[in-house]
Length: 337
Image 1: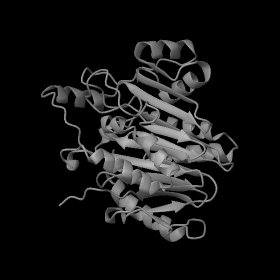
Image 2: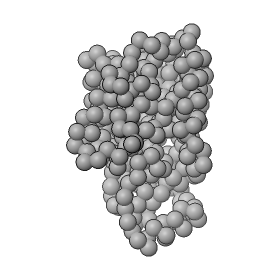
Image 3: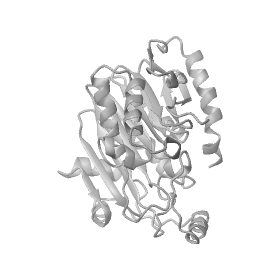
Image 4: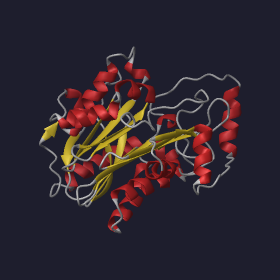
C-alpha cells in the first residue's frame, strides 16, 4: 500500500511525460473539458492500441493486457487477463481475496466484463474464488444470463471448472479485529477501500472491451454490492462509440448509471474528458458536501481519444500506448480550501 499512497507524485510526473514526450502520436491540444477546474487534464488521442485503467495498480494490469495484445490475443482476453494480475495481488486491500472484509468478516468479490458487441457477464457477492473476472466472462459465454450472485454464483463457478481458494492474511485479520472495537463505518475518499480497478481498451483493429473487479468497500454491510459488477454503472462498452469505467463511491455511480452516461455523452459529441466531467457534475448536484465523496470516471473513444474527471483531487489512471506507459493525474471539480 506504500506504492498506492505515493501515486499523486508519480501521476504528476507521468502526466508531464505523456504531454511532453508523446507529441508525435498524441494530439493533446484539441480538446479540453469546459470548466476552469479541468486545466490539469487534457483530452488526448493516441494511435494504435490504447489501454486505460484506474489507479496505479493499473500499471501492472496494463502491462499484462499489452502483452496479450502483442501476442495477437483478443482485446477481450486482454482486459480479462490484465485485471487478473490485480486480483492475484494479495497485498491489495480493495481487489481480490486480499481485500478488506465486510463487517461480518467476509471478503466478497464483484466483477463484470463487456465486449465490443455489447455482450456482458457479471458476478457479485462471490467468495473464495481468486478470479471473479473470469467467472463473469464464463457467465457471459456459457449461460443465457448476465449476472449471478452469492452462493448460487459460487456453486456455478465450482461446477464449471473454478477452484475454491481460502486465504487468511494476518494483517487483514488484525485490522478487522481492531475495527470491531468500534465498528464505525465511514467511507473516506481516496483511501484503499475505494480502489476498484476498471480497465478499458481498444486494439489495433478498433475493437473495444472493458473489465471491472473489486472486493468493495472495507467493512461494508454484508451483502452490499456497489457499481463495479453493474453494466452501465461501473462499466459500459459500446463498440460504435467508446467505453467508460468508474471508481469511488459506487452508490453514487449507480444512481446516475454513470459509465453509460459517459458513453452516451460521447455519442452526442462530447470529448472523453468533457463526458466524464458532465457525469461527475450530475452526481455532485445531490451531494451535501463534495469533500466527503469521491467518484472518478475514465473514458476511451473509438478513435483512441481518452480522458477522465473526478469529484476531487487524488484520482489518477494508468495509460499504455505504443509510446509507453505512464500515470496521468485526473482533473477534479472540487478543490480543497
